Image (tube, rainbow, N blue to C red; front, side, top):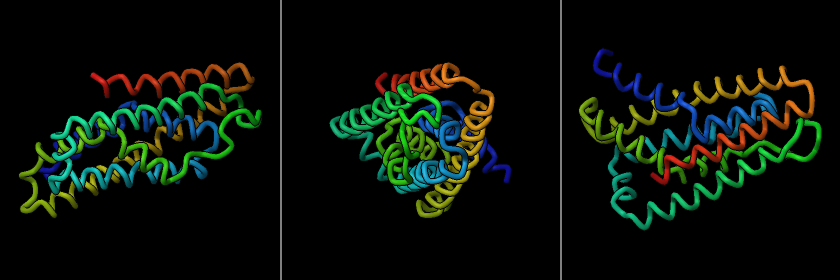
Length: 196
């Protein structure tokens, strides 16, 4: 347990800090509630778990070693996040009918994370840093995949619950407009570190 504690601390901090996925979970919780946001959160958590497992197996290094592939992933991921940010920023109260009618799906949540170079870098970094915790790449893949998947589920649930709390505090269309603009702006801003 003592040897895995640094891994669990790293994973907890990495998944709970604000970013594109957490902002999306917050916005979804505020607009659609917890139950309807579960597919999004599950898609993101499954994607992060699979990225961590793949990084542990060494395949993530291929992406990091190929600049053209990195740029393609960055461009696709950034375009998708900007589109989502625009949709969130333009929406009003959940009952106004001018925002997304349905929450982001499991598949879209999965793709969102797979197209995020920050996620790749984080999981490859974790695989490199904690490689000695397991006796084989397969065991490391299982350990990292489980840790990142579970931590993502907990983190996204907390962010989604925050969105639900904010939704209860918002009483007017103006309040909703402000929240949606802030959520959209934060989601768009989460792209900036990707391009540095």
